[in-house]
Length: 228
Image 1 (spheres, one colour):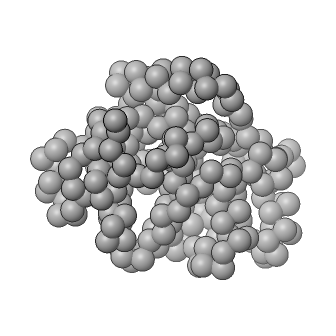
Image 2: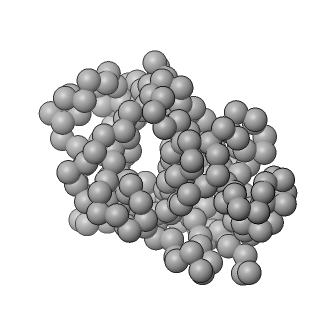
């Protein structure tokens, strides 16, 4: 079995800035439309006022496990664990240390390292790191599928009390999408069906090597911090 790999983004400040600017313009041109202010208001979840404009992620991923949906998004550098059917018990954590070695994307190696049964698809990448370090993450169960997204494919917006991540797919090849509303203050996360088309998965087929972009250098600001 060929090991899965991680693609490194340019490490220089200029390279990261150029990629971020390009991602923003790409999102504006071709990515799914973001929820309107009236749609956001109708969701009955208090995020407060917007502290920044809609932006495009420089990289993102969604991991569907048996008992939770996990979302990772950069440059926020957040990893969000949302238990299925439990809106108020989600976890929103900083994730700046995405593994840079291929074994953390290799199912066979991870099953042995995490001591999982042979039929259980393991968590991968940063999710596997959380699983190993914190027993609470093991409640997500076995992985069912995951999708990685390149720059400009997923939109997000920060608010006083949290953020929205929009138009993530419900399955790798599904035409349906979900919007995720995250209230960091009250520890509430909700998902809603979206009328918009989902972001297209950038991962390859299950028989081939898959990859997920690595995290650019963090800005140091938590979600909900107004920009100057």
